[in-house]
Image (cartoon, rainbow, N blue to C red; front, top):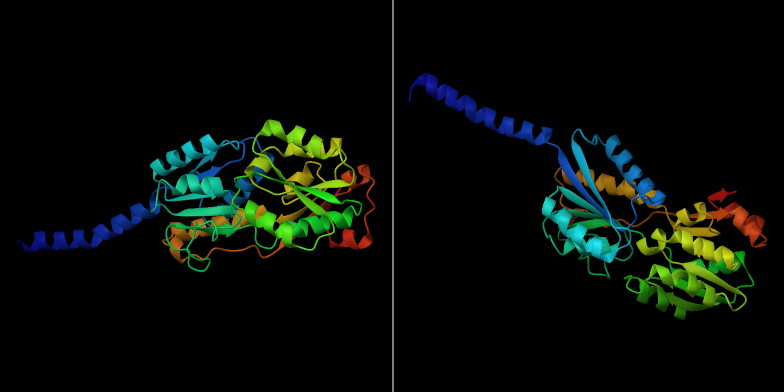
Length: 326
């Protein structure tokens, strides 16, 4: 080999890894996102905005070095399943999911694309991860059920509406947390009796609440999943029509006119999910990123709704609220 050719070869050998590294840095990374919420849902858009703001702070600019493909399933199980397959076929760098159905829909099609769940109630018992500390596999994320059991919600409802003697526990029957929450309600020493209200059909929401409200001194505990959030306007309107005090796990219900909420700040979980996406895009493995649990909950009260229900709010209760909506 001639000396000049040899020098050129060596120079190319050194430059080639640098070119590959530069291309890796410059290419647009792809994020898939699947949520069961409707696209026009204000809460869903708020969560997406919180996620994107955090990504921007971490240096990931939409349209410049990252592109997010969002799929809104409108609480439709068939859409969730089809969108799960669609996103898996896109082969993005990471997929973010909201809710257990979305996680199941994506997970069944891929065991290698990193998946970050931003809102799943009980990932360990549901079998999504091997352990919270070391999830294993391609799935990790943020659990939102921890710290907000159904008996706590019922306790808070009775505190604000002491006349309540029977409480309807509204939930979707195929929600993974149903059995656990029903067991907690049955075994906890509570001031009011809980009655399961399992609903999966949007058309059944209004008649189910109307039938429940025929007896006096009743209230509602509404557990959160994408079905309940997607149809919260109907739930809130029916609770108001039948003068049922209700407590929710999601603040978006109170912002829309619901009485009170006690639960995880989901915007914060989406911001945290963005930090995990950042770490994965920089080379971290989901198997080594521990499942995070919420550090705090928030208590939100709607004063206008409380007044409409003729509820007397103690100074202690008002002082404990993280936010009062008038």
